[in-house]
Length: 464
Image 1 (tube, rainbow, N blue to C red):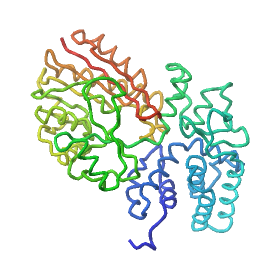
Image 2: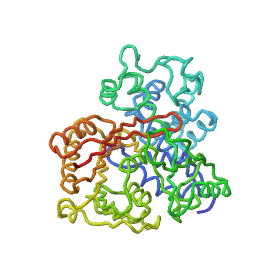
Image 3: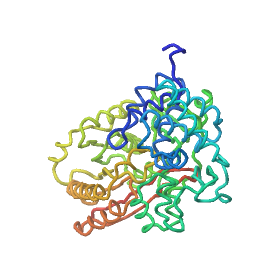
Image 4: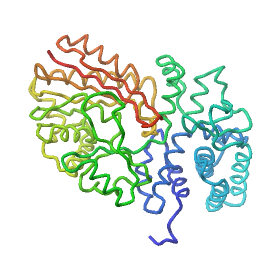
């Protein structure tokens, strides 16, 4: 593609949002198809996911300062406005004139003078009402400020957010673009301060962490390769998410496509969040064990099992979705692992009782701990859906129980922070399976603090 035909990050983001329904589709495949049309791949990705992540707040701004409901704005113009408002509010380093000018240009290409004038008027009106694009939260007015980070936000000159003193659930729901019923559940469970931190963690720009493959490299060597390629990266200091065996994680701080990083194709590392890396460490698998990963796709934890056992365990990986098992195979091949065998789910269902020393059970869940990454989940999650998932999770626990040898262990994990899917599921299992006992339990809440991380739950169950 010639330079003349390349598109800007804003144009790509607008096109993705125009084609995308968050209640039905995932933005990733649409974005992947379009990214070759721009040289600003990382920026286009941030614009897409940032706009989706903050859509409720963005639409509140549009409605307040345009005097028109987003439902009454033509879809293409609404996508252009959403990208523009996202940058005005959440990208304070980007000049206002640049945001407005390109939005007007894109509107002109999509329509005529009327559309151009509308986009120009709305964005300039919003910009006029912003008093500080990045102010300290400690000195700002809550009803006028959309939160960007734990310390800063974008402040307007009028009250447009719900009053937190009157309805804290409504305020947090609007400010952080989350379902109000979900925020209400968190407030009941965790209280106001912790819920606010959860909302921040679920709405942050998530950092990219990679888990070094110790079978092929060392952290020092990998960091040296990054430095030689002018990639900004740093080792994650300490172990702030609990005890257990050390796991060498690296944070990539520069704007890079992960698959283009030095060492990716050679299998030197895997992308994994800090909280997700805890699960296998809690299981503490050993060389020589027979291990089943019952819900293995896409293989991030499967490959970690192989790495921490020095590729010397017997690992069986399966998933109820056979198409997703191809991702497991790709990851195993890239990382050069030989201890993992992928089998159809039906074969595991027919496996003899007491076949394994350990089962890793990373169950399907509501994703409430990873809303910052799985941005579409906030548009789909429903209370009844969580109840349905809880039934599936309990069935999987019961299935795993029959496959464990005496003295074996189940590591149950979710990327949810809902009690129904976590503590209650485990307590229900223990009540029905008296031969098991709870050896360890952790609930990690999503955090925007450094080092930022997703939410996760893990429980270690031992069979007597």
